[in-house]
Amino acid sequence: MATSLPSVTAREGAQRVQRAGQLCLDMKANDVVILNLAGVTDMTDYFVIASGTSDTHVRSIGEHVVSEMKKAGLTVHHTEGLQQGRWVLLDFFDFVVHIFHPTLRSFYQIERLWSDAETVALEPQE
Image 1 (cartoon, rainbow, N blue to C red):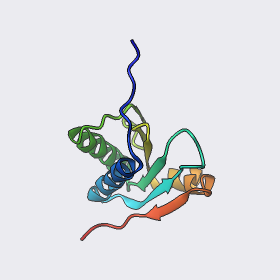
Image 2 (image 1 turned 120 degrees about the horizontal axis):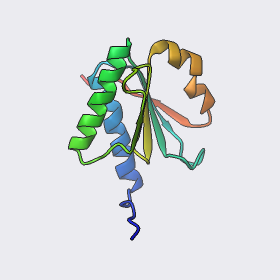
Image 3 (image 1 turned 180 degrees about the horizontal axis):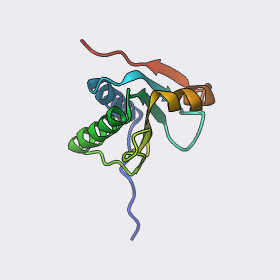
Image 4 (image 1 turned 90 degrees about the vertical axis):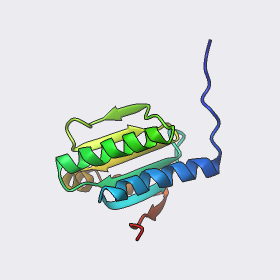
């Protein structure tokens, strides 16, 4: 018997991706942005992109996002790079979190690759 994923409204999706971005900021991530990919690609609705300052920092940010989203009832469906800490990818289906070591973010220039997407920079909340 096939199971279906629960339907997520646009507002719920936006709130979830905002929460993921804020969780990155809570761990002192740098240059946190959200790319709205609706209408650009069918693979996901949003990217959250952030940078850590070291491999350890990148791993810590990723682990924090996974842990806190799980507490909120969201399960990450696929992860890549958590052990290495150079580029962590967390796939939540309707959004994907990318956490980069600064040298890799500069090399891959993912924001430029998806330049058709609306981009919103997140600032730390005081």
